[in-house]
Image (cartoon, rainbow, N blue to C red; front, top):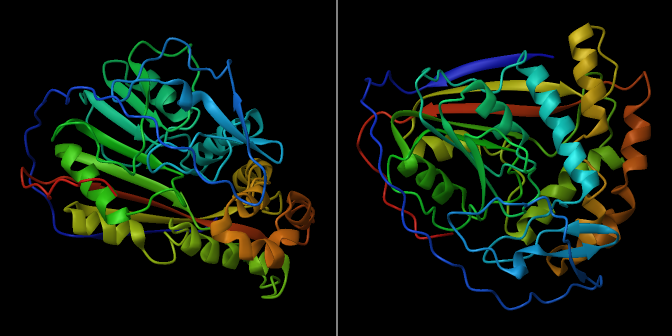
Length: 369
């Protein structure tokens, strides 16, 4: 796997950190049910959601949060506020997220992050925590730091380190924490979920302490091949177009890597000393290098093209037009079989982007979006 590193911005001066209390909690009113797509959605209550005794400090838990939507046998988070996730939250997908986490740590030689964090950090947030596995591992590594993981689905475990907690929250809304709350803002795998990325980064900058860091890691929704074997009219060649066009209709871009959304958003928000590391993650066991082969074997189990895409295309009328053209392509069998051949040399781009908060200067607070 080839990786490249580049940095932007000037050297930032060291600034003292400060702690501020969080904003008081607010309850979110239940929203009217969303209109159904051509695919019938069945609302189900999952009594064993894994929420347990975890209580969110940013939203009161109502029964609507646990009213998962079932589409073509997959369950999705309830649509509350601006949240409308395209990935499932069932056992099949949570397992794939944990495998993805392992592949990411292999890419980073066992590390959880790339930012130059201090040993005495006190508060960390993991936006879009999913199963919470990154937050849990980070909490074990930094037992004296408070680690908060947020997500729109209560699918995190209850058996967690005492310094870790999870909150139900939608990152598309105004963040409820006060300025200068976190030493480290971590974001991973949020492609296709955020409506307004510039607003998202402004909120991250506002909540990041002076001297703190933000790190955002995401994948490109497309396939590459070292020997150029992917033809434009093939299923794999059309894959990126599915996401690109669907994201436009869905109102949540999948072109983070292609359009340099991470770098531009972090720079505009005020982060400095931005460092970008580009990776090509192998899919399958084709690499000769032992480490790359291991990464590829795990990545093949949960490539970005996981089997929920066809459900996503069909379940929303925003991309209904795509289902006729691309629906037959969006199957795991199509990609699993192709990536499983020894002749294939497929990979997907992954970008880690880190930046620091240099001073007490603040970007204007976001008002949602």
